[in-house]
Image (cartoon, rainbow, N blue to C red; front, side, top):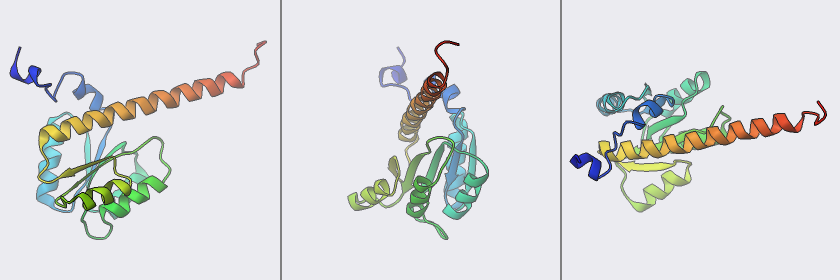
Length: 165
């Protein structure tokens, strides 16, 4: 067995095709950090679009659906906490999984980030392996939500069908 297999290789063969069904919107005001994260995400097989702040991200979300958003907390124009709240108030075709990344590393900051609606909270610099396992969780949650939505639609369709026809 390879060493990666014994510790649970985050880049397992099932992850890459699965993540490609869930485009990611990366929201980061620092262009160097944004470029590095974009490159990491693309090397994992992710489809990535990016925005420099929350306001830009909300404009992009109005035009296209991104089931996964990775956002910085501290940004100009619209910060990550405000954007996270706006996403949770919004109406989208499916659940939006939010991962907040920040240099703010206190418990209070983490609680504020999660209370604003983030599903995950990562401290910069973001560890690639940790990001990968958080994305695996996002894929699992989004897949379950999609399956549940389809089941509910099937039940609804069956409930309006006359049992004699």
